[in-house]
Length: 146
Ligand code: DAT
Ligand code: MG
Image (cartoon, rainbow, N blue to C red; front, side, top):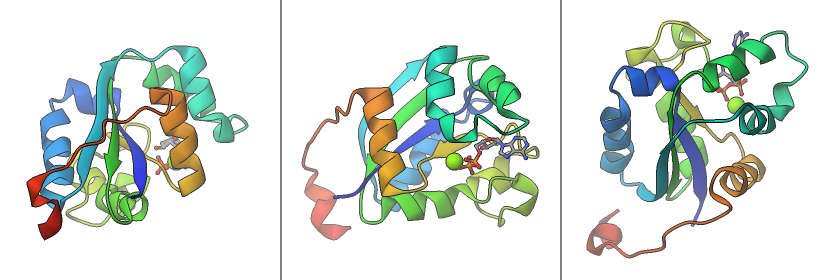
């Protein structure tokens, strides 16, 4: 079963959107297999976003991600990586389709509420980085209906 790393960013936590975001993925039929509220260190933020280290906004991005607690999660389900990206909407909320998380709750590209892995390779890398690769495996009786 495919897994993805998702994270409610500091703006989403401050704005009280953890429950709303968790609810969207639960209702979709994905399974939460790990989660934690945490203050991110600069070292972790820089490692997480290392692919972007040469971008002009890298410093601001690390400042933002370390500016308050985040809610880090691992979700499991069929095509969860691409489907959760579709549910998040485009990086720039102004271009995100109505009904997506970023379109519904954000207006700036910097503060866009949520992170989600963009490929199987990055999902594995991020689950290893944030959760030491650990997930909670469990059955739900509803699984056969999803
Ligand atoms: P995504 O979060 O949709 O995967 P990304 O990986 O390209 O997007 O970039 C990571 C984050 O960096 C993104 O959520 C917000 C920030 N960012 C991206 N492009 C930016 C830009 N042009 N100006 C400011 N921040 C930007
Ligand atoms: Mg990305």
